[in-house]
Image (tube, rainbow, N blue to C red):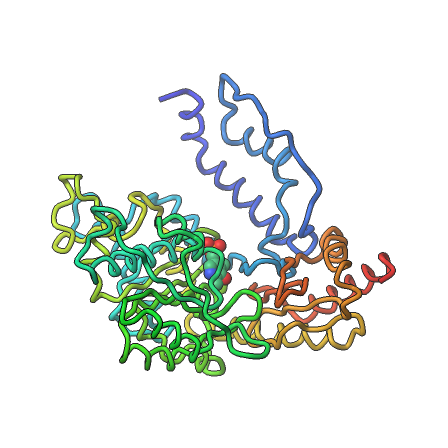
Length: 469
Ligand SMILES: *Cc1c(COP(=O)(O)O)cnc(C)c1O
């Protein structure tokens, strides 16, 4: 063993102790750490011939790299749709690194950590009140979950023509219908060789909605003359958290043949609260569902799962089977995750989720979801009270989509947001909604409280004054 590695091995406890203390210092100070930074490094450090050892590496990290860290797990990081790690999720994530398992098989040879993934998926089905007709697995994010689901949908489409696209490539035009797809679904179409332009945009419901217009959907289906298609539907659009009508889509299933995918990256968690459950009513009839855990479940990044109806298990294997590795055996008899999803090696992503679900239970997450939605309403009301802002859409769940009041202020929206974000006390993201420039604030973080809204409103007022808007 290399001598520096050996020295680190003997010093393991001290190294972890220091890393732990550093973590605690960061987390205890989140309120004061800015949400943006202009600090930069020249990322061209030359690699040292002799290693420094972990303790010295930590020192260098603190000097040069730590200032790059913004308060992304903090209470006023409202951009994108990001949660922040909870204590249980961090404990689970650290232990996932410590145990360093590759959850693949369940039959004993080489480990059975995949059973933890099975159990975690089962706990998630209970949290979301979904039946165990779904087989699920963990991937890095909702993008990969959409990719995985649509990959199996692509295989299903070929099977309708007696074709095996996974083996022989795509030989038919694949029909895709969708109203407000997330950019990651469109990207998945590109990665899957279907083509990012190859979908038909169905109308959304009239008025201030992003949900699919069911009549227009049916019109588009009829135009396909009985040909199969893939429907990409939304449980929570990013701008306005709108939901397609899943009961109505379920009815269409009785008449037409299609693969039904739901992107519920964050909106799927509506299922956890009796108040919002109606939004996802009927979703259990889908063929595949995407859900992110690094959003509303508040676990560290790189955590999402897909759910695919077990009736499609053979199509899923056809899509992802590692067919030429002899040690893998029959994919159905000898279950192994690497025959069911894109990656072969994965970390034990289920563990932070398992810890979170066991630590906080259904009630913990129900409270978190309801708290986030009430904070969104609270922020929306506080905005309306200011004369300078208007909502671009009603607040349906946890996202607030707004802009500077009046069309004459449209060209000032982006300079306002840049100035606000530069102050470092809140972070929101720019958006365009119904051809108007807007700003999006998303409430998902477990730490966010009423007082944060007060702070942000003050920040916004001062930014307006500074810019003389
Ligand atoms: C965030 C999000 C995605 C992409 O998720 P990643 O985890 O960033 O890959 C997809 N769909 C929806 C609706 C989202 O909100």
